[in-house]
Amino acid sequence: MIDIDQTFLIQLINFLFILVTLNFILIRPIRAIIAKRAAWMSGRVGEIEKFTASATSKMKDYESALEKARIEATAVRVGLRDEGVASEKKIVEDAGSEVTGILSSARAAIASEAAAALTTLTAKVGQYSLAAAGKILGRSL
Image (tube, rainbow, N blue to C red; front, side, top):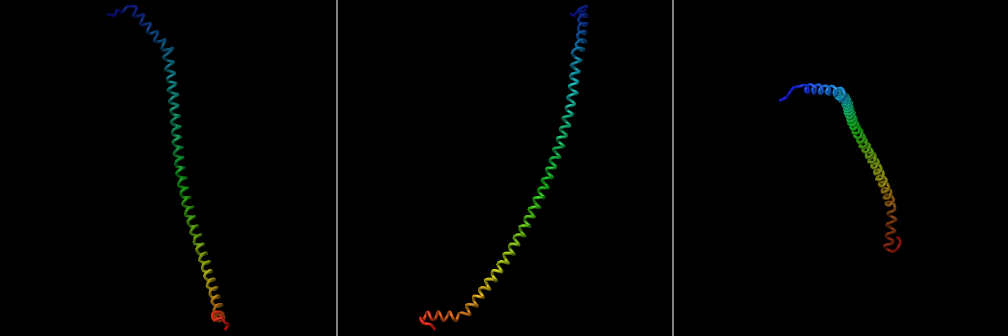
């Protein structure tokens, strides 16, 4: 059985003295350091959250600017392609009309040269026929 005598009282006083001493020397400073560290960490967490929010906002702005640039580039590309197609069509039409003009003037020149040759040949057909008959018969007519 447990005997409660004066050693128990001395041990109890010793325990309480050690408890108070350790509280002043060790436990309070450790608690203060832990509280200080918790405050520092919560401040860092706040900074990290602000940084993350800022980065997310900047990323959204970047993506929207990139999408806007893509849309503008597509519009410019389509506009330039349409302009190129119209320019190509005009060049082809101009070349076609130029070719048509050259072709008709060449046909007219060929027709006039053929008419002139026919007129010349028609005028000299008598001479040529006499010369041909003379060669065939072997004497001049």
